Amino acid sequence: MNAELILGALERAHQRPIGRRQIAAAAIERPELLTGEGASAPIQGVLRFLEELRAAGAASVVVPPCPSCGRANPLKRPLGAVRVCGNCAAKAGASLCSRCNKQKPIGHCDENGDPFCSSCWARDPRNLETCAGCGTRRRVYGRTAAGPICLQCRPRTERVCGICGRTGRGTISRATGKPLCDLCKGHWIVCSRCGDGSLVRGGTLKEPLCARCVNPDPDFWKRCRICSTTWQLTTAPCTRCSLDARLRKVFAADDGTVAPELDRLRERLVQVDRPVYALTWLRKTNVQSTITALVREHSQVNHAALDAMPRSRTLDHFRSMLVSVGALEFRDEGLVRLEREVKETLDRYTPGEHPRALRGFILWHLMRRLRGRLKDKSASVQQIQNVRAHLAGADGFLRWLEGRGKSLSGCTQADVDSYLSTKPAHPKKCSAFVRWAVRRRYAPAGIKSPAIRWTGRPARTTRTSGGPAPGGC
Image 1 (spheres, rainbow, N blue to C red):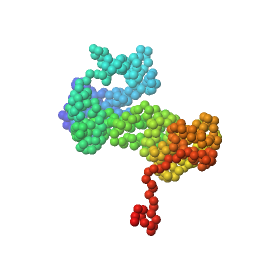
Image 2 (image 1 turned 90 degrees about the vertical axis):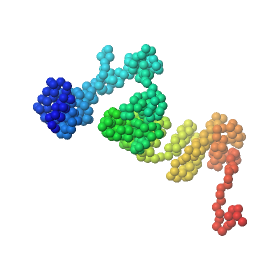
Image 3 (image 1 turned 30 degrees about the vertical axis):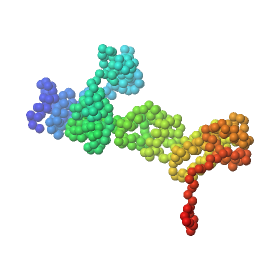
Image 4 (image 1 turned 60 degrees about the vertical axis):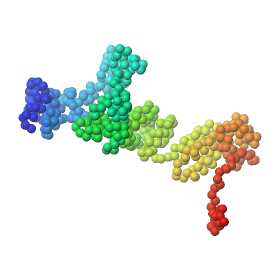
């Protein structure tokens, strides 16, 4: 580089001549500051000088990364003999928060001198007031003539959105210079030009555009500081990297380890087309509590561990996700739930004749016949409901007999007719149980129960060889 470029970079690095002389003296005394040792610079101006030289085209000049975290963040604060970024300096000065009992950077202290981290101080009741707009106790964003207001109720100008055309609250997009409403700000689209999935940054709802197609200049956009691939206006983590970090935190046990099954699910979830949907699902309270209970109570994630947890729809959905990514082996959940219901129904009986008859009817008659029909296929909803209805019909009849002090082997035709006259919930299924019990000699012979005849089309008969076709001449 020539002397003019160096002097120009030096002038931009510091406004005062005394500061320029200090920067020049430090660079002359320690030339290694220009080739990678800039973190140990005696003054902050040396780092600004390195950035200006690099921007002017000095390829041999190295702007040092943070010596603590290794990221290319500005080195603003001294820590010992080197300078580190703001995040590392804050972590080095972290202390135990009196509210959450976590090692965090301390931002405030109350009147008693107790330290608070920024998150706990923002949620402290002493910093909350009733919003004049919505009436909710929240953190005060500003004060008006009507009283304090929160962030959601702050006055904002309504504009016509340049993407959807609706009039609403929003901001001016720095990418296009046009109004952008709050709904479109987080709208995930498939770019009409390149076909990539991303947040909308321009165009219209019919022909949306991603950031790269709105402005193809790479110097205009910043990158995600984690993956360095997402084109965005800040260096904040992108949605996909935020989802990855959230999954790692939720799936980790108390010792920091992650089960292989959960790690495989994390890898697949991070690759979904719309990570914002997965992030929204993960933020739900029931999802967090279910996953937290699983990783804390069970070191291995398998069907047995999931069966030991309280049943819920969230748990069933989470199990199906593990099965879909191959983390757990497939099993027919409909049959498993049905077997669980049968066991719970049988456990309510005292040992005797009735549970033996009910077990034989459900397990050895209906379930065995169902498995023979299924072979390697899964049971349909109608098949599961049919067996469940038979279970309810037989259980209702046996409970009715027990309530009158009678047993199945001692019941009569009058008892069966009397029960069916009460119009039970499943009379057809109860009749099927009674006929089976008579055939298997659980009930006295001669008892009859009405059966429903099939009134539909007859089954197609197979034509024998050499004979005429049905209906033929």
